[in-house]
Image 1 (cartoon, rainbow, N blue to C red):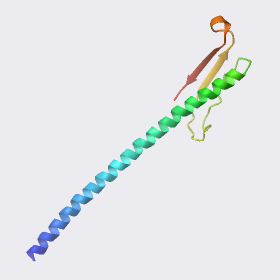
Image 2 (image 1 turned 135 degrees about the vertical axis):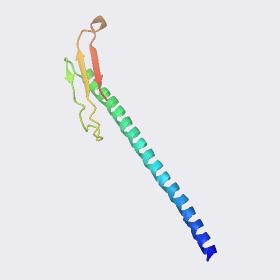
Image 3 (image 1 turned 90 degrees about the vertical axis):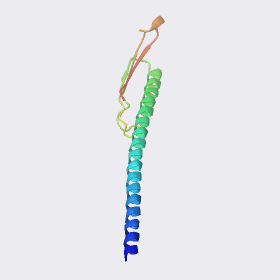
Image 4 (image 1 turned 90 degrees about the horizontal axis):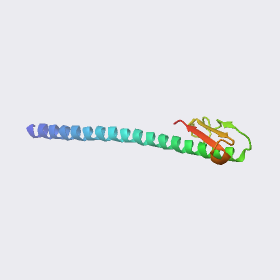
Length: 107
């Protein structure tokens, strides 16, 4: 009878230690998952902003008149990044009368 009690206490102790390790591992995995998700969202926003700049620069390069663009709004890349990119072209204000491009990206 006393031997059965010792085995029961040992098994319960091991079960407690294993359960604690499982809870700690789950907590760590959840935290790592959130960190990875945040990094992915940050990278998507960064690349969406770069894509917006390239799109606006190309549109400004192809246009003949002074224009003000704000065409890169929410969900353009399908990610819902909503990165505001403003670009404007002013003719003849640069060095030697060249055009000046101004780009403003907020992310």
